[in-house]
Length: 309
Figure 1 (cartoon, rainbow, N blue to C red):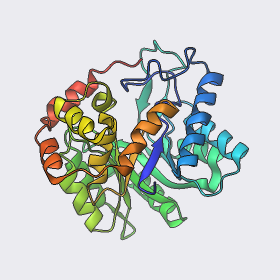
Figure 2 (figure 1 turned 180 degrees about the vertical axis):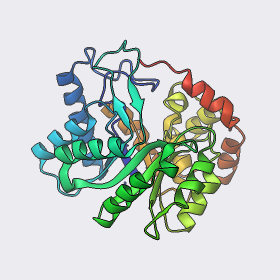
Figure 3 (figure 1 turned 90 degrees about the vertical axis):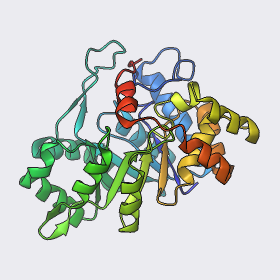
């Protein structure tokens, strides 16, 4: 399980854009119930051998839930990565007009790093800019870049996640950034799945350059589990597993992918996702999956249309 990370985006807040959460989450999504559901999934993941948990300031109470779980269980061997840049403003409501607000600034970084430290302390090994795009003001914000470089110098790996159809451009531009003559970033977490593989070449280049690569949205926000294309379903049937396992296995088949981040909403979804670790796709199956890739602009337009529920 050393190539799997557990993401808490679907468990740390009551509303999210992942398909397949209905029926998986508690019928009443109050804080206590979501906390209990998070602990249950964390326990099951740890028992299965997963030792990396990925959270974010914008994932509702994900950092708080994780901190509570670590305090109660006493596990000292769990790697933690978190993200800053988005603030959760959904007020624990399903019907909020806005659930999160993005700001890449030195002030937002300082405030959110302090919040993360207060909850997780020195357990955080990787701190990432959340959803870096080519138009982010971060690229020309010298005080922010210097602050990120200082964090790196103090022993916390600094990375970034990406979103949108121009992920490859953002990856290349971000890894070219330097502060005090040293690279700012050592890790990237990008969307890559069989429907949206456009960042693959840039991620492979990053891996070859010694950067750490994590892959998020491995199930395309649940699309590859709930409404998978027939090709994915056929491959799953041939292996006696679910389409979600095929989607995650396709990520693990990329030698540049250090870790695949999965985001189950229940222990049943976790178990189904983890079947990918025992699934080896044939060359013909991998070729068949390549053929179902969508045009990046269309993929991201579809993603932006998903409802928070």
